[in-house]
Image (cartoon, rainbow, N blue to C red; front, side):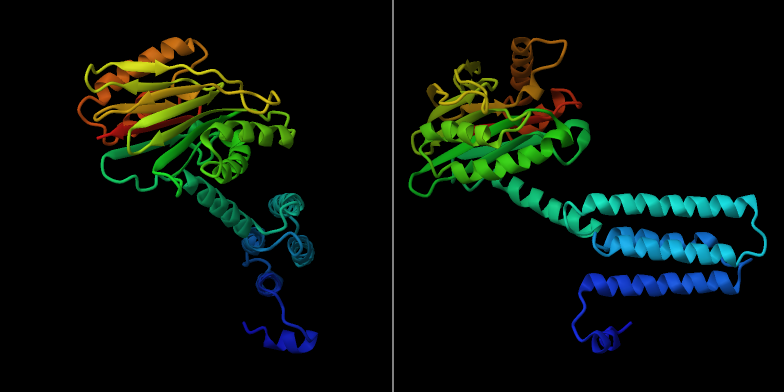
Length: 353
């Protein structure tokens, strides 16, 4: 259907939302006319189709008016019925109930300001762009970094996230693994915001300044559940020397290629977002040829019935068997084998070949 006649009458160019509204109103009018002309043949439930399309395509400004228009058309279809049976009453009642549900949904969407499909696509695009900050940059020959993330209940949103970068001014690699308070979709929105903020901080600050800056940022948010744990790795790609700083986070584990044993690197530092002017101690180490370093969240090692220390021992035991002689795909294998599906889980494996 062309919108040029409408544009000539109104004197201005109509928006895509207004164009969609016009098309849906025409479709609703055609279906209503069909019921009026053939009341015993045309189904009353046909108006559900434009109502559903409107809930998906129209914005919060146009949708309430369209719902009112559909309800008016429903009243005309009632008047066209020769006999009002209980079946017709039930069908019309369901139609009005659907109109009410869509109307309430439109009021909730007005807080976002965009329609259903557009709002969802914007949110998904935002999630993908921010989470792409956890993608591993090219570290050159001799290094392999793998990450795996699983959210509670299998949803695409999680309270655990990873941000990494390779600073331009030095041959190093920086990585932070974060666990936001809560899990699944409840923590997902805060994790998206924090991952964007942390992505701007990491690499732009000296390694020792990152966690204090992240702590100050969280304190400024003034959230009811505004805390998070984190572990920050700064790795020299030339020498293999690394620095670890932890903020209430489970310790990293290093595998020595010579002995085949795992060493746990404990560090001190408070949870982010709780204490002003917090200080975070540094743990130093070196990754030699064949060594590996594992960073993870508490969903990998902690359950309501198991102490975190026992969980770490179990994880390292699994790693000994699953990673022996083959680190490729090791992060995914460990995440799939450990932790609870009801908790967010994240793990990063850094291996020097």
